[in-house]
Length: 336
Picture 1 (cartoon, rainbow, N blue to C red):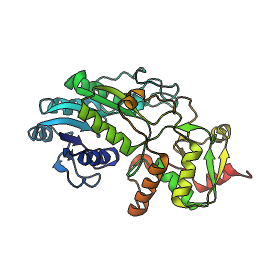
Picture 2 (picture 1 turned 135 degrees about the horizontal axis):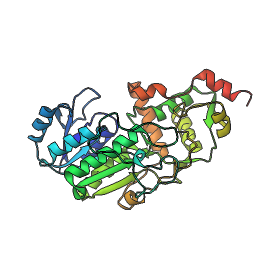
Picture 3 (picture 1 turned 120 degrees about the vertical axis):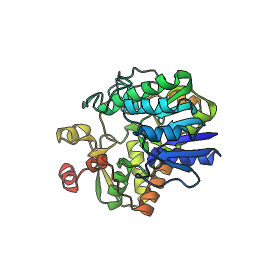
Picture 4 (picture 1 turned 45 degrees about the vertical axis):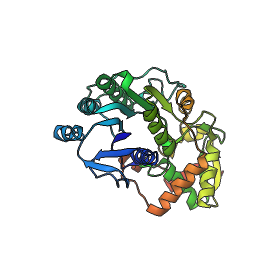
């Protein structure tokens, strides 16, 4: 197959290109060349998805059997891109997010849960952020989904809605922060209950499912995450201890103490959030079509290996908000 990947140099995009090449496909990437290294073996076209002349030139380089969009965030732009490529590609796969669901993170989700309403031509300012409900990011991604469907039709559109994605090249910095903190050793503040189950998906599993969905022509939307009983928070942190060969001691602090202490959920202690629906996402539809979940130890070890090899420090703005300071951690641990 001939596959066009929009993006292809960062986290999910890089993994998708790698998976598609490994499956024997001819892969072309379209990006500005400013966010990371190209994957060896892929054909590269430089350009900006926000410039009409670049999109016109890109369409002339087709045709492709499928487009995989890993870099679309604003509905208006995604609509322009999809319309520009509609005659040059048979299918369009858009990488979205579980944040498009109206009930996330409060209630459990299925593949058919209601989605936020956002116009397919919305600009970057549509939507707003709330602490316990929809976010601008979620609204915008929902609008992007609608924009692709308008251009390609539902039968030629595939939407993947991953939850938390972890692995090599993660630029938000959630797992990298935990690995670095555990590697420092000592008493580590572990949030909430050790038995809390979580559902992160390895970026390689997401990428392989994306390629498989294109190969098999699967249309529709699919949640992409690990099973709801996949691992516990304690198992994740102990995998970090093993990978880093640390002497860290996990000290579990109850949710109520952290909330009462004003700790920011999801950011100061990455992956910790008390809303009941955060880790209750059903991905049955994708699992029936072959989505796999490799052991968390593989994800953790691979990420630590990448950090050690690259010395990576994320340039993403969100990464600056990740992690609790040593001083604040020590105060919360107190005499425990």
